[in-house]
Image: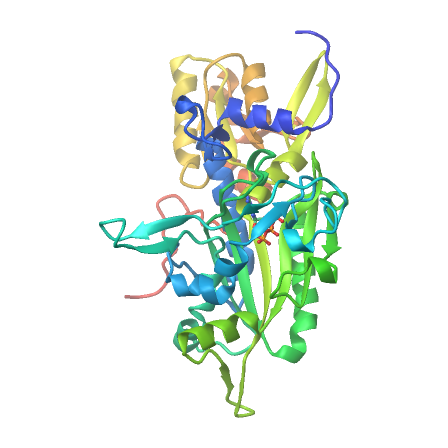
Length: 455
Ligand code: ATP
């Protein structure tokens, strides 16, 4: 192998690694692909699930003031009238080729972006929402839309959640789900596509506390990324100025990440005021206010909305974790993914194909699988197997050799430092658990049960 020098992360390297190792494939690839549609492969689906689980754990399960929801992608067409999406999304618009802000043609003085001065696209009647038909015969069926955000499903269920959970203000509702936007310009891999997944919180508060809650969620959401390993210097907050604010927003800040193409939005946090509940209440004729038992007053809560993209988060985690290190005469490509996000937590690697070694390795593999996503690999040299695991971000490799048969010990090799330690087989699981921070796992004693109560 030739002498190489480590380089910096760029989008091409990420796309190539994702393709090569089975994180992300171009959608419908055997038919030449479908523009800006992506399919998550065996490792990508694990990464995405881990991101969603980490989010759900932090914003729903570990909080008293949040509940979850999973609403339908197809909604009553009136929803989109009330929300402003139907009207706002069918005007002739141009889009800035650089910052992707969209402008009505009558807002433009010259054909340059009023925000950053770059070139804009040709104006076109812009329908951001994908249309489809409900009913067996197209002409008679009614038009419905694929939701362009998950938020509206939360607003229209506000009263349902309130009455069934008896939550008091402040409280929030969280939802993860697919959203569809017929974007004019797509690109930068999974950064901007037409089908993507969102993780959204709608947090309902008393109007006078909205600013405090807005700031609270900025900090909370920034720290979620940091806790999962994103370097602080690659994150920033960007406040929207008045002209940039969406029609419903009182204030809005983006959490930007320093992607290979530059600083770009990872998550948006908006103070939406009472816009959504007022709109849906007047459009549906149903009251969507909140009755305060203590003060006996009715109020329409204000809403703070932290809205994140699963795909954009996945891209940010991949870019941040990517590293090339000089390793003797070669380059070691390694994904320093946080263990919670790593698609595979442990790889079991026998150093020989001899029956006794393989038997022991397979026993350990079977023992670890109920606890974590574990790979078993006995093909190729150990160097190449380590390389493969480093490149997909596996935090620990366990190797089994001849000596293991005699001293009942195996070797754990750590991804980031490449340090190796020898541990007795009976303590392997607990050692890995301590290292992986598996606080939310049960490990049962052999043949034992943790059930202590009575039926
Ligand atoms: P942008 O300005 O980049 O188009 P936006 O401000 O329209 O994004 P929001 O409506 O605030 O985005 O959506 C919330 C989040 O959903 C974004 O921060 C992003 O993570 C994700 N998201 C929005 N549009 C897309 C898309 N086309 N592809 C992938 N993720 C998206």
